[in-house]
Length: 243
Picture 1 (tube, rainbow, N blue to C red):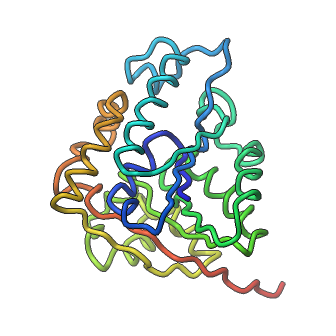
Picture 2 (tube, helix red, strand yellow):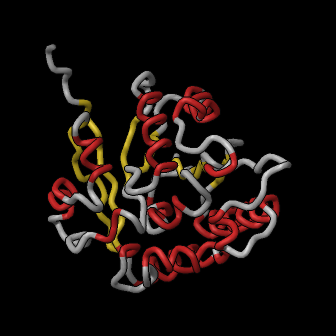
């Protein structure tokens, strides 16, 4: 089960790995709910060309449906509205996520975003890690949310973890988690060939988002770009230090 903060995050980050995971695989979009009726378009939705936030939500939900179907993943949008319309980066308001995790069957593996340079992603990480600490029958993994984490020059190399541990620009979220957990590489997938073609096709399903993403992240769909390497880490809580 992959926690995707927004529609598109799981696919941008893990579309190469998702079909390889032991199934069934479910993508849970935390900020997957509609905006309140009185809302006006956020700056992001406006940048994507939407004048009406309800239209934006409907379009993005349909995009996510197509992408997940292409990858053979089930999808569950939670009802938290997108950050600008309600819950935002306040971890205490992500109650539906808490309830969803508590209802998962024993033995489920939950992939949590590291939360690089995006406050909504960080909120999902913090709420999920807090909840999962009380659910020992579930396995918690951490994944690199792309394209954010993948901008390190060392991203596609075996030095990526060390680079994240010292980077002031792209590694602060990794460092926050590293302060509480021992982080060990579990999956490092370089996406090539037919796997890359499928991932590119899945990413292109989110056509409404691609122009503003490119403004922030450059040619992120290049074959040498940040999406071509996916990373997942195991987490082991560090022992509490004595006061």
